[in-house]
Length: 253
Image (cartoon, rainbow, N blue to C red; front, side, top):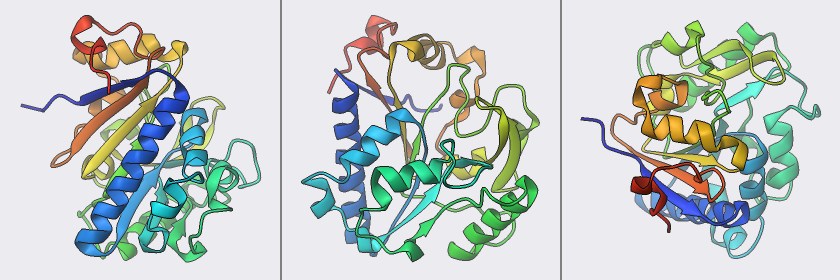
C-alpha cells in the first residue's frame, strides 16, 4: 500500500515559503552531517519564487551549507536564460545571483539547445554526476514540485506519451502555458528521491488540489508522484487547501 502524503497547511503564501525554507535548511544540514553533501532539484513558478527569495533572508542564508550542495532543475522551458519563461533565469534573479554558492555546483538544464539535444545532455550530466549505469536512477535528497490547474507536475502533462517513460532520466516534451518545448525529469527520477515536496498556493489551485488528494481515480500526472523509498509532503496555503474535506483541512502546522 502506498503511504498517504503528509499535508501541511499554512495561512499565507509567505508562511508557505517560510515552511519550505525551513525544510530546505534542515534537510541540507541533515544530509551534510550524514554524508558531506546535499543534492536538490528545484522547480520554477510564482510559489517557488517566494520560497527561493526567502532563502536569501536570515536565518536561512547563514544556516544553509551552500558550499556542500548541488542544485539541479526538475524541468525547464527551451528558451534562453534571459527569457521571462526560463526557470533557471528566474532562480538566478530570486536567489542564485546572491547565494554564496559556486557556479560549478549549479546545473541548469540546457534550454538553448534543441529539445532532443538538451534532454540527452542533461541525462548525460546526471549519469556522470551520480556515477550511474544505464537503467539506474539518481537519488536526490530533496525535490520540490508544483502542479498546474490541469494536474501536471514538472513538465509531465496529462495525456502525453512522456508519462509512460520508464527508462530515460530526462526527455523533451511540448505543452503547458506558454506552449513551448520543454525538458523534464521523468517519473522514475522523481520517485527515487528521498523526500519530495509539493508547493501549491492560490484559490485557482483549490479544485485541482482536491482532485489530486481525494480522487485517486483521476489518474493525473501529479498523482503518479509516489516515492519508492522516500516521503511525500504537500505544502499548501489556506486558499489552495480551501476545498479539501475535513479529513485533510485540519492538518495545519
